[in-house]
Image (tube, rainbow, N blue to C red; front, side):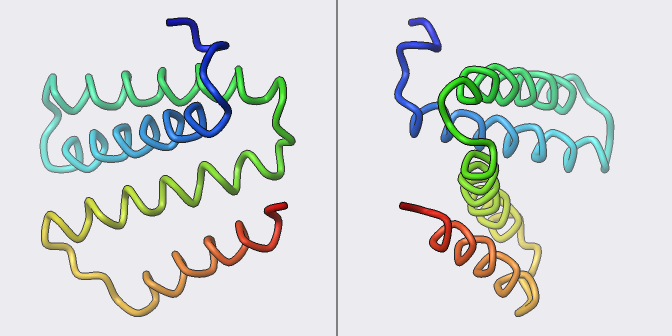
Length: 107
């Protein structure tokens, strides 16, 4: 399937997941560089880059980044929680502010 055929929301999700996967790879690499960590970083950034390039043709940049950052925040905070990293009130507040910003600019 060609990337152009995907709807903007699906591409935004793909970009956010790509960034989330790359972040997970970086977290793994922070403990030890492995082939899995490197593969996650490369594949995540490739997916994110390809999705964003296509999205930038039709979606205003200001909206695009808030959508992707909001989705990526949800992915990364969920991952951090799942591996036992405590989430402080500051983390929850930061995430909430990102979602509030998304709500403000959405149509």
